[in-house]
Image 1 (spheres, rainbow over the protein chains, first blue to last red):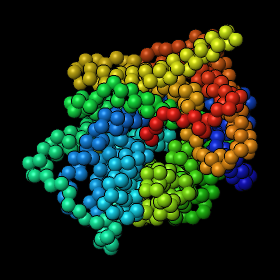
Image 2 (image 1 turned 180 degrees about the horizontal axis):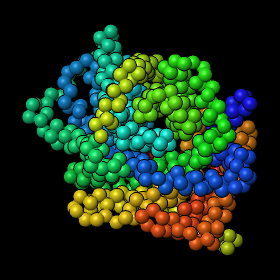
Image 3 (image 1 turned 135 degrees about the horizontal axis):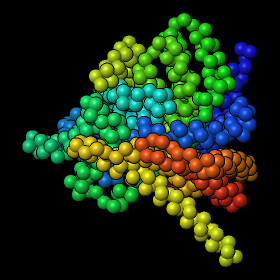
Image 4 (image 1 turned 45 degrees about the vertical axis):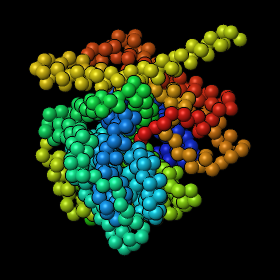
Length: 438
Length: 172
């Protein structure tokens, strides 16, 4: 019997991964495996009806509502030009500093990620704005591409993050707590990235030559902060503060975040019908495709439990070692390997039903484990061979840049990610303190 | 030929209407939640239906947008293997994928139609702040999957490729 659960689990995960790898749309890959398994395991065609029933239950869940709202907030931020305005403001605030454009990437990227919640959008925005400028200023590829690769991934961790909401709803962990748990690790990671850049400039000053930017007077800087930075900070306070203060649920604060971005765009006279339509369209494209995958994966965890695969895996994994940190390392490596071959949503839907029960049975806090899980997802975005950010950044890199150069530029930032995971293991309060204030 | 043309136009209008329905759902969710919280802050009693309507909007957003996303090749896909193929091997793999996807959507859509019919016949209500007929839950899955099946069939029967149909920019 001991091999039965392994075979079932192998067929489930192998089937989905195999279909995905040959190019079947992710949602359809989940649907094929789940419908066949439901037909076999759950009384024939009644099992397929169960897929429909579960899909309606899963999708008509209020905790999923922040997903389209956070995406809309980020889309509005882009399409109304607020992102560009904030970036220009930050640029004017930094003085003559070696590697200033690399530092600007980290500061701007951290700000963008709090407002967009989208890693790929974050990287695309930073890359299109900064790579040409860094190239012009004589920055070496690792100094221009590395910070974009690192900071691009921050949006997964720093709220508002659509993926955090998805993780919370799939893993049945409090979404509000999970959103807040990402704040401090996200900020620590930004500091670690800045330290990596500082070290790189120190070791090789010619990699990011200093130059004399346009000087701004103190009064001008004050005006820039008041007009272009503080209002954006106010939006972050609206979104995160309302959750921390218990004034609103994540869904409500997400809606107010959208309203705040619209109000700001109206104030700056950059709101237009075209920008609103573009934002709504991209929101529906992204959330529609995400939710369709959820429809496909609706009975996945139920089938794993029903077939005994979850219980079998749980008892097998816990029998491997009594050291829970060794098992945590094992889970982290599994996530990294999965993330090398598939997108973040698929990875989440496959791994959560298997790994979350194991983590909880080992005594790990589910909110804390959620953040470690997100870190694995963030690292996998920049891990070869299929890290999506690698390809996005390669697409924006100067002509002739090889994928190997992009990968080596990402490496120091992956080390910084690993340092943060270590800090999270040593000091769980880094993730759990802020949610504890709710 | 004329009836066929009208049939095609009607079908196309249905897919487009479903897409606009999905956009309307996204906008409605925002308005509903903002109105609910604003009323509460102002000391009024917010309508009990908000949460239920937002929950329905999520399901309708997913299923009404799905056919257009298939048509434009916007569903998430890993193109590593298929992208490396060309000529006949790629064509055969693509056509196999379209056939499997169309069949899968058709079976799921059929199951959803059966559930919808059963719920219409039983006349049961879904109680969640607002009492709505329970057939409204499987109905969008039936419609969305049926249209997705047709869209995949179109890829199967024509020279268009799902993998090169991408038109709209995504931000995730």
